[in-house]
Length: 261
Image 1 (cartoon, helix red, strand yellow):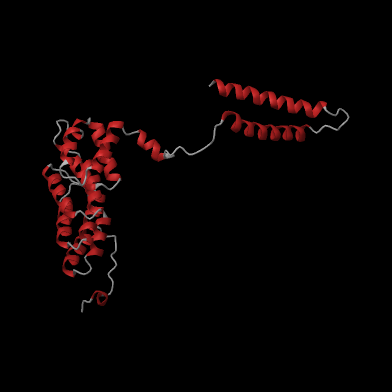
Image 2 (cartoon, helix red, strand yellow; image 1 turned 135 degrees about the horizontal axis):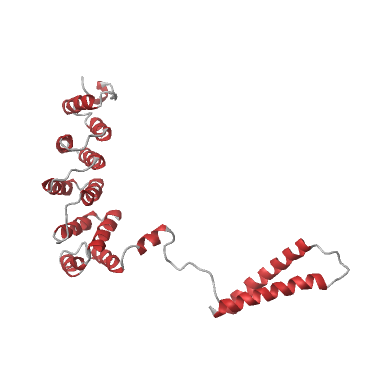
């Protein structure tokens, strides 16, 4: 702080000296205030920047820390939570050390830190670790069934093609009498279709029809597109779609494209 004040005073002194010199060195010369001030500022800036680097020894360089939103986001996570995330990733392939680390560190986290760890692992697509953390959360005294916790984890697992884990988590969610939203149905149906499991996709579809929330068009359209190689299943979904959304239309491609005669 003291060095900064000295440099500021020194800059002011140099600027004043350069400015006065322009006016007093040649009294008979025609004075152009704007040009003289500009030249004084430019010369002072050059001298100041040069001598500042040499006198103080300071250099501008990148300190290695992430810039912008990434760094601000990390500051919202506690140090202990960051340590747990790092430890879980370090021991994720060690079947002996990982359970010990969970017992000694994960179980000690407070509610908000544990939720922060779960969210960050989902963001980093560490879905296996996220599933273990969620199982730890379910055993806490403060845990209450929350559809949003299920939603984010199920979507992360579906996008990672971990459909067996999706099924187990789906059953756990239904036992707690929770219904997902349209986005969750869409991602799970898409995941089963891309994994070659149309029967499981239809089971999720039947569950969606029993949901207390009104259905939306997107999961229907994803299912109709994915069931093109299965005309019998597709016709059933198509009939339901036309009943629920009578004002919407469905594109039916020529049958010969899919080998149906």
